[in-house]
Image (cartoon, rainbow, N blue to C red; front, side):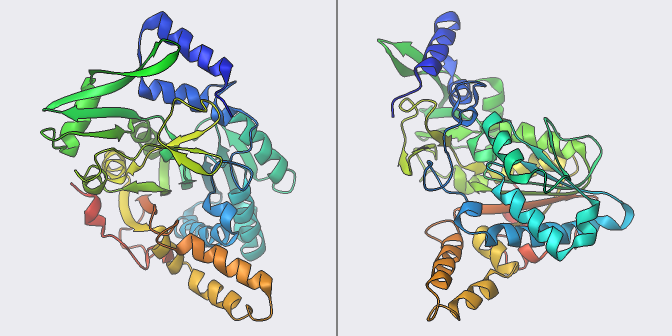
Length: 383
């Protein structure tokens, strides 16, 4: 499918009116323009008919196990508060929320009746799907434009930050340049312009080796998001699941082309100037930077692991064994087993997705099942 011509015209007009725009601005328009952006359209995005899969669409066990962790977190903070709040950022189709709410309702009815489930979703089409899926069965669900102040509860997201617009940098001969997007001869072209002070400060803080040549991405919006979440949270947890690495691995010299990718109809490409408004764009997250920003607003890092170890701690091995025991007589059991394996497999989702858990007003020694088996130490995120 070609690019959305209306969106292309809007981006062109902005460039013609004010000159080249940072790639982050181009990405923001391509993904989040309120009328023509990728996430604003009614186009199917997730699952077999879309452009990519997410863990909740691979198998419902993901929602069930994540719900186990959220309930355990709620129990840690529920002793002094009548209402418990779950806040999901970027709830997509609402499938994850549905699975979590079903588990809490069935397994923890007392908590369910004290629960307020807030969804913060920018996409109008996703909001409509969430309402259709969740209401009226779950009246505890509400939608907000931002996180409420002085909140007590659990904030979580799954594959949110990787789709935030990123600044793309080119480093060569000791010079740090930012990639801008221009319009020339009826096509988008890239220009190298001086990087802003904020980006240069980030490069210095990360300790990038500017005497080498490579490209990388900087996700300043993710840092702003973490700062806002930490400020608004009075007591509770922040659980972030996403593509990414600690800074020392994300910006390693062996990763000279960065991590920016596009997804269109379950194929991967590196060209953001095709299928504009019709394809997803992502880059890996700097988890070290998230921890540093979180600490400034009172969020202590409680643990960092990958999806494989996170799900193991929450009991996926036992769930898989139950399906394995039935495989000889049930083709459906084999299907479930293989789907669960995909969530765990290192070559698919297991090692790619990382899980960061932070806490505010939470004892540092708190034991969480999802952190029983840790792929990394907390020190791996401290510079």
